[in-house]
Amino acid sequence: MTTVWETVIGLEVHCELLTQTKLFCGCRNAFGDEANTNVCPVCLGLPGSLPVLNEHAVELAMRIGLALNCAVRPSTFHRKNYFYPDMPKDYQVTQYDEPLNVGGHLELASGRRITIERAHMEEDTGKTTHVGGRGRLHDADYSLVDYNRAGVPLVEIVSAPDIRSAAEARDYVAELRAILVATGASDGRMEEGSLRVDANVSVRPAGADVFGTRCEIKNLNSLRSLGRAVESEAARQIALIEAGERVVQQTRHWDEEAQRTVATRSKEEAFDYRYFPEPDLVPLAPADEWRAAVAAGLPVLPAQRRARLGELVGAGAGSEDRAVGDQVATVVAQGLDDLVVAAIEAGADPQRALNRAANEAAADADGASRLDPASFAQLLVMEGDGRLSATQAKAVLAAMLSGGGNPADIAAQKGFKPLDASELAGVVDEVVGANPGEWERFCGGEDKVIQFLVGQVMKATRGKADGKAVIALLQSRRG
Ligand code: ADP
Ligand code: MG
Ligand code: ZN
Image (tube, rainbow, N blue to C red):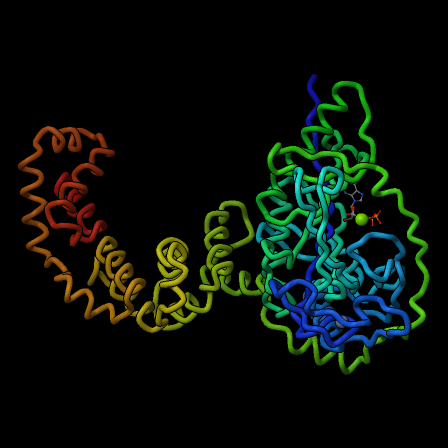
């Protein structure tokens, strides 16, 4: 019997906060500036300099914690000691056993809830670039260090090992990114390193109640490499176990070229961090009023927006509604839910509004961002009461997406007049007359031939006919 394997994943996501300045000094927090221009004695760790905690960074960290349903608690900072050239102080200030945010959860569009263990504050390191060889430390000709990033405020968000597939890991990071962007805590740019993901991966026989040994894949900087790295690492572990070997707990990295995970040289990770309380900072205990004000200022988050739209379009939680649920998720992810809600409130059919937004509008994000809600609603009402066929409505919407404008005017310009009933009946007669074979098969009970006949009517009317009306006519003619 072959074993069915289950993948178990816990993610650690580092998020750079969108502050003007660094965590403990007044240096600019900016990506892409000339190397080593945003530095001072504090972030360079020069003797005698003292840190001053950035209030805005604490506020953003609280926003993240509250948006992830965490308890915001009194916390302290520690020094995590290790030597690496990108860290001028030779220690990183981080929150260790008393983090700011603990015990929350994040709800995915699928309805699955992922537990958040903690979301703590820490400072970023500088950035080392290894030049020559394959761009890694051990085969480089030389290395360059940029300290602009040293001391940039980070929040590290640690999930419980609740994630069960590569696809779910991607969903989790996409959802987390949407929350971080919505709260204003992050710009969400993974390609600029604003979000960096470490993936802990283990496998176990499906249904087992203990976890397998995990490996940690460091520094994944796109959803695509996250998905691939998790898949490849799970496959590697399964192959090992099936060959009678054991998974060894270790740190690995994702080799993009080879499309596999590779063990990081163990010397690099043999650290004893010698954590101790940071003596230059007092404990951080945000006042209740401050925490309440931050909570009150949170925007409506993606999960709440999906719930609101799902209710309006009548999507339940059942699996039969998965297609509608996917459309709702797409519309919210693209920020089109306000448009759809406004259209529904203005009298558009909810399902039609959702369809047009999830299909046509979502495919043209730029155009959709300029779409006027009242015009969008008007278009849907015109389609709903039969003034425009589905084909015509799509053509009008395409014109609105590319150049704006009023749907009634665009329809008139395009010569979209509804066919009156006698005109349509005439076309149906012609199509039946021109296709006697198909008509006979349809009359003989071959229902699917109706698609061909409807297609012919659409062709003859250049898409002006209302599909439902054509079907009704053909069916009543068959008797
Ligand atoms: P550490 O402090 O050594 O980094 P933690 O226990 O804090 O270890 O876990 C770090 C991350 O690893 C968390 O995201 C957690 O969910 C995940 N994790 C822990 N055990 C496993 C496992 N067996 N398989 C997959 N992920 C795991
Ligand atoms: Mg870890
Ligand atoms: Zn500085």
